[in-house]
Image (tube, helix red, strand yellow):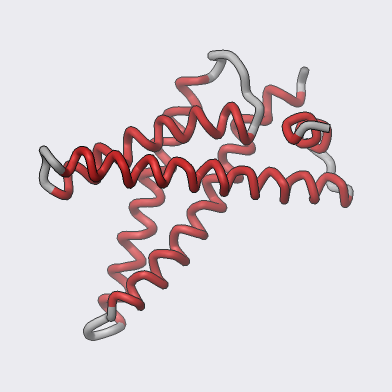
Length: 152
């Protein structure tokens, strides 16, 4: 059974198979997200040739988030067509803002509690913050993108 079909049949269930399907969907979400993180890095490098770091970062994040939302719609959640595209893109950008707030806040807390945090400490804090916000992104997208599919 293809991944998308397996995931669609398990939606709304709490059985063992349903939880396995959610876990599989989470793994697919992480893989798709990883691919779009690579895109973000490449965009940043290209944009950085003409822009300073902050604008290059912001533009690369927004563009890769828009592309990533399309990718998650299609690959992770099996959403086809253009129905609710705008709502999903707005959600993706809102979740980007949420993730930026979580990571910035995490760095602020680290800086407020540790006199001179090392790069390693910063990295650990950012990884933890990104994992947490990634789970929020997954479940928010899952709620938004599977709601219509259940009624079909």
